[in-house]
Length: 149
Image (cartoon, rainbow, N blue to C red; front, side, top):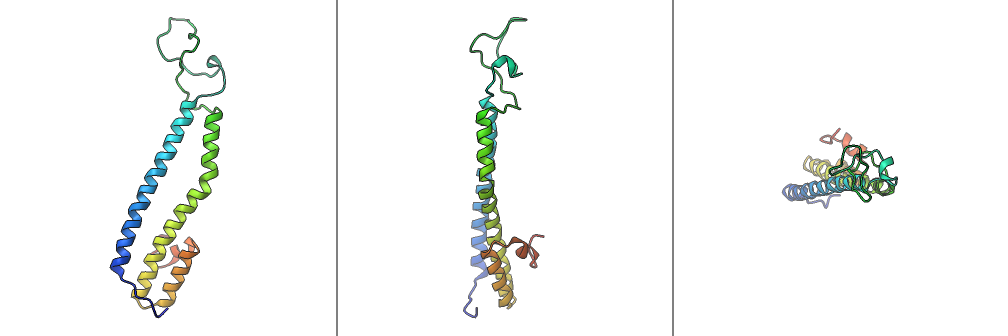
Protein backbone atom coordinates (compact mmCIF):
# COMPACT_ATOMS: atom_id res chain seq x y z
CA UNK A 1 0.00 0.00 0.00
CA UNK A 2 2.95 2.37 0.43
CA UNK A 3 3.31 2.53 -3.36
CA UNK A 4 0.11 4.52 -3.81
CA UNK A 5 0.46 7.78 -5.69
CA UNK A 6 -3.02 9.18 -6.22
CA UNK A 7 -3.54 12.49 -7.97
CA UNK A 8 -6.89 13.84 -6.67
CA UNK A 9 -7.39 16.08 -9.72
CA UNK A 10 -7.05 13.05 -11.99
CA UNK A 11 -9.57 11.12 -9.89
CA UNK A 12 -11.95 14.08 -10.01
CA UNK A 13 -11.64 14.28 -13.80
CA UNK A 14 -12.36 10.57 -14.16
CA UNK A 15 -15.35 10.81 -11.82
CA UNK A 16 -16.80 13.61 -13.94
CA UNK A 17 -16.43 11.41 -17.02
CA UNK A 18 -18.03 8.44 -15.27
CA UNK A 19 -20.84 10.66 -13.96
CA UNK A 20 -21.56 11.94 -17.47
CA UNK A 21 -21.58 8.42 -18.88
CA UNK A 22 -23.78 7.17 -16.05
CA UNK A 23 -26.22 10.00 -16.75
CA UNK A 24 -26.32 9.03 -20.44
CA UNK A 25 -26.91 5.39 -19.47
CA UNK A 26 -29.76 6.42 -17.17
CA UNK A 27 -31.34 8.47 -19.97
CA UNK A 28 -31.02 5.55 -22.40
CA UNK A 29 -32.54 3.07 -19.93
CA UNK A 30 -35.44 5.40 -19.17
CA UNK A 31 -36.05 5.82 -22.91
CA UNK A 32 -35.93 2.03 -23.36
CA UNK A 33 -38.51 1.46 -20.64
CA UNK A 34 -40.74 4.22 -21.98
CA UNK A 35 -40.52 2.90 -25.57
CA UNK A 36 -41.26 -0.65 -24.44
CA UNK A 37 -44.26 0.54 -22.46
CA UNK A 38 -45.59 2.42 -25.48
CA UNK A 39 -44.97 -0.61 -27.69
CA UNK A 40 -46.83 -2.84 -25.23
CA UNK A 41 -49.83 -0.51 -25.25
CA UNK A 42 -49.76 -0.15 -29.03
CA UNK A 43 -49.62 -3.91 -29.55
CA UNK A 44 -53.20 -4.34 -28.38
CA UNK A 45 -54.81 -7.53 -27.18
CA UNK A 46 -55.58 -10.94 -28.59
CA UNK A 47 -59.38 -10.59 -28.38
CA UNK A 48 -61.84 -9.57 -31.09
CA UNK A 49 -62.27 -5.79 -31.32
CA UNK A 50 -65.83 -5.67 -29.98
CA UNK A 51 -64.86 -7.74 -26.92
CA UNK A 52 -61.76 -5.71 -26.10
CA UNK A 53 -63.59 -2.74 -24.61
CA UNK A 54 -61.63 -0.34 -26.83
CA UNK A 55 -63.30 2.58 -28.49
CA UNK A 56 -63.23 2.71 -32.29
CA UNK A 57 -61.20 5.37 -34.05
CA UNK A 58 -62.71 7.29 -36.91
CA UNK A 59 -66.23 8.37 -37.85
CA UNK A 60 -69.07 5.90 -37.28
CA UNK A 61 -72.75 6.31 -37.94
CA UNK A 62 -74.79 6.33 -34.71
CA UNK A 63 -75.44 2.75 -33.64
CA UNK A 64 -73.27 1.34 -36.43
CA UNK A 65 -70.73 -1.37 -35.77
CA UNK A 66 -67.17 -0.73 -36.86
CA UNK A 67 -66.36 -1.82 -40.37
CA UNK A 68 -64.27 -4.97 -40.76
CA UNK A 69 -60.60 -4.07 -40.41
CA UNK A 70 -61.42 -0.77 -38.63
CA UNK A 71 -58.49 0.35 -36.47
CA UNK A 72 -59.11 0.66 -32.75
CA UNK A 73 -57.53 2.91 -30.15
CA UNK A 74 -55.32 0.90 -27.84
CA UNK A 75 -56.55 0.54 -24.30
CA UNK A 76 -53.95 1.67 -21.77
CA UNK A 77 -54.66 -1.60 -19.93
CA UNK A 78 -53.94 -3.79 -22.98
CA UNK A 79 -52.27 -7.00 -21.92
CA UNK A 80 -51.95 -9.02 -25.07
CA UNK A 81 -49.16 -11.49 -25.81
CA UNK A 82 -46.75 -8.81 -27.07
CA UNK A 83 -47.24 -6.69 -23.95
CA UNK A 84 -46.72 -9.76 -21.77
CA UNK A 85 -43.52 -10.67 -23.64
CA UNK A 86 -42.13 -7.14 -23.32
CA UNK A 87 -42.95 -7.10 -19.62
CA UNK A 88 -41.26 -10.46 -19.14
CA UNK A 89 -38.19 -9.25 -21.04
CA UNK A 90 -37.79 -6.25 -18.72
CA UNK A 91 -38.46 -8.39 -15.66
CA UNK A 92 -35.75 -10.87 -16.72
CA UNK A 93 -33.27 -8.02 -17.32
CA UNK A 94 -33.94 -6.31 -13.98
CA UNK A 95 -31.07 -8.16 -12.27
CA UNK A 96 -28.57 -7.05 -14.90
CA UNK A 97 -29.82 -3.47 -14.91
CA UNK A 98 -29.68 -3.29 -11.11
CA UNK A 99 -26.19 -4.81 -11.16
CA UNK A 100 -24.99 -2.13 -13.60
CA UNK A 101 -26.30 0.65 -11.37
CA UNK A 102 -24.78 -0.93 -8.24
CA UNK A 103 -21.38 -1.36 -9.88
CA UNK A 104 -21.33 2.24 -11.06
CA UNK A 105 -22.27 3.49 -7.60
CA UNK A 106 -19.68 1.22 -5.95
CA UNK A 107 -16.93 2.42 -8.29
CA UNK A 108 -17.71 6.08 -7.70
CA UNK A 109 -18.12 5.77 -3.92
CA UNK A 110 -15.03 3.57 -3.67
CA UNK A 111 -12.89 5.98 -5.67
CA UNK A 112 -14.06 8.98 -3.67
CA UNK A 113 -13.68 7.28 -0.31
CA UNK A 114 -10.30 5.71 -1.09
CA UNK A 115 -8.97 9.03 -2.40
CA UNK A 116 -10.20 10.94 0.65
CA UNK A 117 -8.68 8.38 3.02
CA UNK A 118 -5.42 8.47 1.05
CA UNK A 119 -5.29 12.26 1.35
CA UNK A 120 -5.82 11.95 5.11
CA UNK A 121 -2.98 9.45 5.27
CA UNK A 122 -5.16 6.50 6.30
CA UNK A 123 -4.05 3.86 3.82
CA UNK A 124 -5.79 1.08 5.74
CA UNK A 125 -9.21 2.73 5.30
CA UNK A 126 -8.33 3.58 1.70
CA UNK A 127 -7.65 -0.10 1.01
CA UNK A 128 -10.89 -1.09 2.77
CA UNK A 129 -12.84 1.31 0.52
CA UNK A 130 -11.06 -0.03 -2.54
CA UNK A 131 -11.88 -3.63 -1.53
CA UNK A 132 -15.53 -2.73 -0.83
CA UNK A 133 -15.81 -1.15 -4.28
CA UNK A 134 -14.26 -4.22 -5.90
CA UNK A 135 -16.76 -6.46 -4.06
CA UNK A 136 -19.66 -4.08 -4.88
CA UNK A 137 -20.33 -3.82 -1.14
CA UNK A 138 -22.51 -0.72 -1.25
CA UNK A 139 -23.53 -0.99 2.40
CA UNK A 140 -19.90 -0.72 3.55
CA UNK A 141 -19.26 2.18 1.18
CA UNK A 142 -22.38 4.06 2.23
CA UNK A 143 -21.37 3.76 5.89
CA UNK A 144 -17.98 5.36 5.21
CA UNK A 145 -17.63 9.09 5.93
CA UNK A 146 -18.90 10.93 2.86
CA UNK A 147 -20.90 7.92 1.62
CA UNK A 148 -24.57 8.39 0.68
CA UNK A 149 -26.50 7.01 3.64
